[in-house]
Image 1: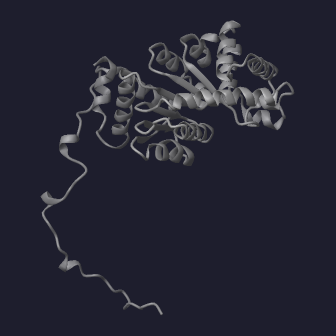
Image 2: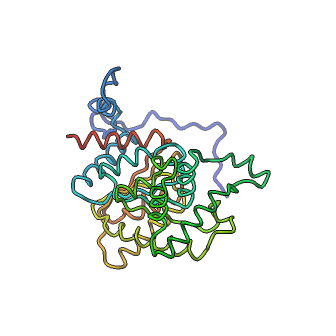
Image 3: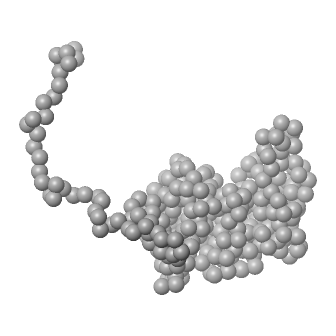
Length: 319
């Protein structure tokens, strides 16, 4: 039977033991406080004004890891959800490719849809709720036909899906090809891979979609991606906005590399997204770095967080 206490009993604190504040370890010190940013200052001054705590400090750590990997000619690998394209980050990524800062980019299947539509039509991202009510969601003719055709030709040529899409966008001279992330990768000789989950992308609803070609070209890209992951010792992997597919692909690629005897232990990983999801937390930040690396969460909108991170990387590389 549970012990019963007297009604309205209070604990008398008069006998507590105290100690001098000077003896207590503390996490915050006046020496870590930064002067505020002043109008008219530089970008470097703005970043240096950020408090030396929590994600501001993690932002610095990830930027330093990317800059260090670049200086040491290590792999800097980006896993990009399609939202990166929908918020206009492809010019930034193209610039990073041109500078040689990015070794490779990996996209999910939705990435090629939005990348193609921007290059072909100059616009993308439909109103799903409105289109779904009429059964019109994902039914744009040109998108389904063009992507399906590229996938079939890629299978016949023995090339990967990411390379094939970038090459086709550029070499076919699509009207807005300069806006394409994959075309930028093709132009700058940066490896681009696409990792498809069957049934997740609008092109899979179209009659021209060839499942065998889709699987073969995406599997070929997985093996190319795994070869890059096998070179990640001392490098950096950033998962930007993929909640499920790319974290799973990264974990399997890392497992394959380690199983084949490749040393991939001391690496930096980071998950950048506007909310924290389970799979990036364990498959990108936690499990891969448990033996000697370091993983970070940077939480915030991509359209702010990614330019901030790489702006600081470029500043560091000027030193």
